[in-house]
Length: 341
Image (cartoon, rainbow, N blue to C red; front, side):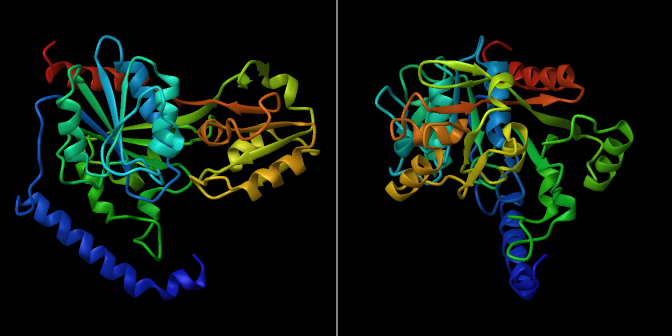
C-alpha cells in the first residue's frame, strides 16, 4: 500500500460507512429491490477490476445456452452510447463496450444488451418478441436495485477480498461483509499447482458460510492465436519475435505466457480506446512482425491495424476441481426457476 493510499484512510472509512448504510437500506427493504419472474444470475466482485468476470460469464453462456435462450446484460463500460442498446449486426465495441461486443461476436445464439440501469435493461429484454429465459448480469454485484436469484462472487487468487480494504486505501467497492450475499464464491486466476491445503487455507481466510460453495479456477489459454483469416499454433509463435499489446487490468500473465526475450510488450489501461497516436506507436514497434493482443482488445483494434499482422489469444475459465458440482448447482437453480421446472 503506497503512502498516498495510507493518507486517504479517513476517506476509506467514510466510503465504507456510506456503502454499508446503502446496503442496510436495501436489506431492510427501505430502498426497493426488484425481482423478475425468470432466472437471473449476477456475476461480480467486491473489488475494482481484474477478477476475470468475462471468462466466467462465457463459462455460463456455454453451460446454459442450450437449451435455454440466454441474454447477457452489462453496463457497457466506456461505450459511446447511452441507455438500452441491443446488439445487432451493425454493432461494434464503441457502441456496446469491449466485453459485451466480445460476447456478441463469440456467441451467435444469445442476446447481448447493455444498460447502466439494470432494471430497465431487464424490462427491455422481457419486452422483446423473443424474450430470454435466463439473464446473466455482468458486473452487477453492487447493483442492488435488481434482486438476482443467484449471485456468483469472484475474487482473484493474488488479491483476495479478505486481504483488501475499502477504496481509496484499498480496492474494495464495499465492505467484505457484502460477500454474505453470494451463493457461490469463485477464486479466480489460481496457479494450476494450487494444493488442497492451500485451498483450505484460502477458504478459511474468506470466511465463507456453510451455505456458500467455494471453487477455484485458473485461466486456460487456447492452443492457437486467431486473426481475421487464419490461426497459428501458439507453439509456432512463442519462439518468434512479436509485439504483445494489452489493455486489460492485469496483463502480466498474458505477457508471461507468450513472451520471449526478443518480444516487446506494450501495456495500456483497462478498457483503453486506442487513439491514432497509439495505433502509430503500435505500427512503428511492430514493423513487419505479428501483433498479438487479448481477445477483448482485438475488438477495438480490428480494422485499425493490418489484418495479416493482428492476432488475439482466447482464454477460458477452468476449474481446478468441482466443475461438475458447480454446473449442477447452476443448472438446478435455472431449472427450478424456468418453464422447464
